[in-house]
Length: 101
Image (tube, one colour):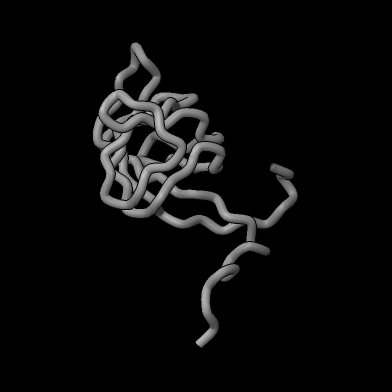
């Protein structure tokens, strides 16, 4: 993603657990998340962005996890319980696909 592209953030979940030896965060999703999405993990001491390269539900690799799912995602840095997860959306894509009222 071009760092100059303006983006907006949509909250998609919260970290519920972190397995340091695996580099995996357990997350509860409040919105869908796909492999390839760019996310921002933010907490009182966490603040990093990364692309989602792996999602697992019940130890099965999936390409997409829907809202309400508890999933594991590989993370580039230490994530902590209660950190919020935001999906970065290019500003040009905000509102695409939504019906205008």
